[in-house]
Image 1: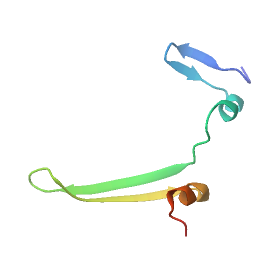
Image 2: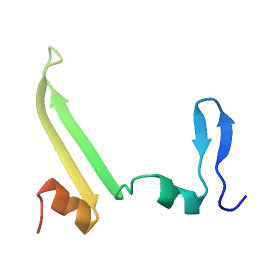
Image 3: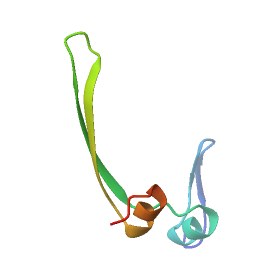
Length: 65
């Protein structure tokens, strides 16, 4: 079904690859690894987030370089 959207059910619509680029906003590729620590009472002590993104996403986030 090249170039056609498939209605799976009332809540799900699957676009073909071609339609995806025409009908939706392009989302940049990213991978993020989160880890954190909590104290004995369950309160957060620390959080770390390491991300790998495309250059365009880094520019949007203000994290160039």
